[in-house]
Length: 200
Image (cartoon, rainbow, N blue to C red; front, side, top):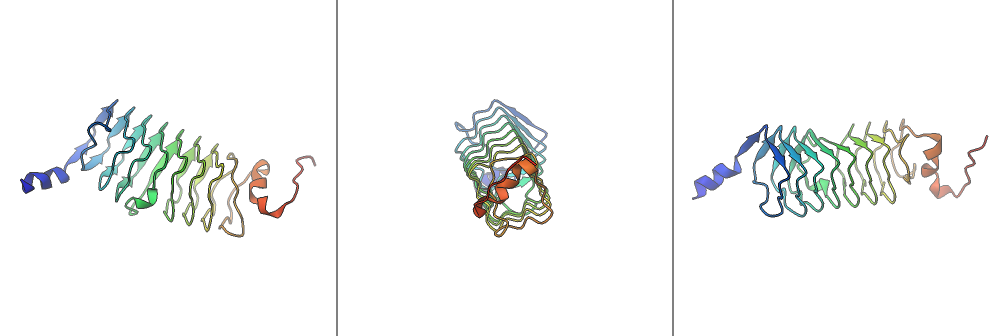
């Protein structure tokens, strides 16, 4: 009946741990997940449309090509996850708050998202799209930005000191008070066709 369908939509699941669940066989139920842990789960190419995650953690999960559609991610922590080709701009942008450690986010997109103060630690960010993203005060610890796209990106007060392989055009991005190490500063000067010699 329609009524039971509505009740299913409003399900709130709290304080639950999902371990080694293969969600590609039976997808995660729509609902609101609060303070839940997902460990060693496979979500690859499944849909998170309309699902709400609050104070949840994903550890060693495969989330590649998960379809995010109005998905709520509020204080969600991803650790050791494979997250290829995710479109975070299709998430519900209200209260979007995430943290990534030891994750592979290659080919994912944060186009136009506002994710100030987000922490990325030991992440692979190859060909990630950060166009028009607000990353004010974000910290990037030991991250690999090979072929990442920065265009009209707000990087004010962001910390890139331990990260590498980025190419950020200071004329086309906002980088005031962002932190860079001397070894990484070449990533800001690529368009100028100049030589940087490390020897003083």
